[in-house]
Image (tube, rainbow, N blue to C red; front, side):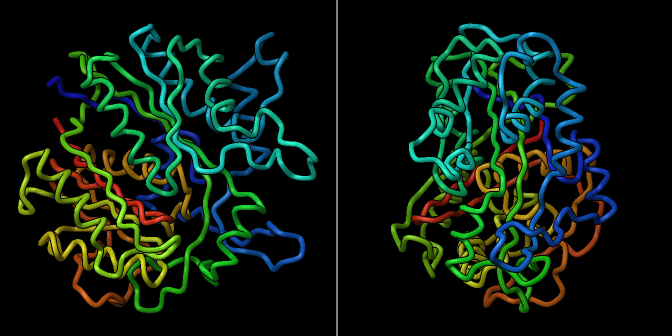
Length: 381
């Protein structure tokens, strides 16, 4: 079976409009989480939001001409186009190229004050609009499975390439903060009262975030590629525990990690770093700690990036995978921001400061509403 590799990536976040800017900001411990007035009738919420004025400036700088002038683009579409443009410019699109979009809510802001559902609010329409803009010849694949979508999108691309349908794929992910999304999480009483503290004993909830990210996956890496990460194993398991609460015993995440590591043929001793989900909610962090311990991964350095980026929903898994690969390329582990004292019943090796490390095998995990869980193993080549 043909191997698949990630050989290029890009991201758009509140911390920067390219990977280098994001990496430098993380090294300095910067967070994009701020107080924002998102719902008029509610107090301000801590969230990580891209500055709209800067987004528009960056979009105007990168796109011009009749093709742009004839179309209206939503804020999310601008984020997505900016994240994908540098990759498409370097890697030609052909009939053997797949296009996969990960998002949970897409253009849901288009529904506000509407009597009927506009065409652009459908996820398939959003994917097709981006695909048409860049000239993709294949039909887009949409992955929308709550907060595991970004990790699953990479796995989907890997599997359709290995099935012989395509030689390469562009995987793109994005979500933005809206009143709808914020109201939903607030109704669960899941929103934190300050910048979140994943795995800390004083954690009290999540911060939402927004971002767009893209990766290029291929079965035919080139000699002049700056880097290459093999997608060695993946798995997605639903524990069917609860509409919003994770399995208290971590069954779904445990099975996902086990399956991904089995496919990658790596033992717990070989995993060098875990990029965890780490939402800073009471039950998610506890469930993850149990699952990692069941897999004997409690001594592996681990972080959550949620206190830097917030929880960017369908973009989170892809964005955090990109930062994990940057960690491997730079031989540097980024701390799990705001962690002070252990807050889970099972031990974890939480990263507390920037530290040097030789990283070959990365385990990226994610969990989400509806009992979904996903894991992927990335190997630096």
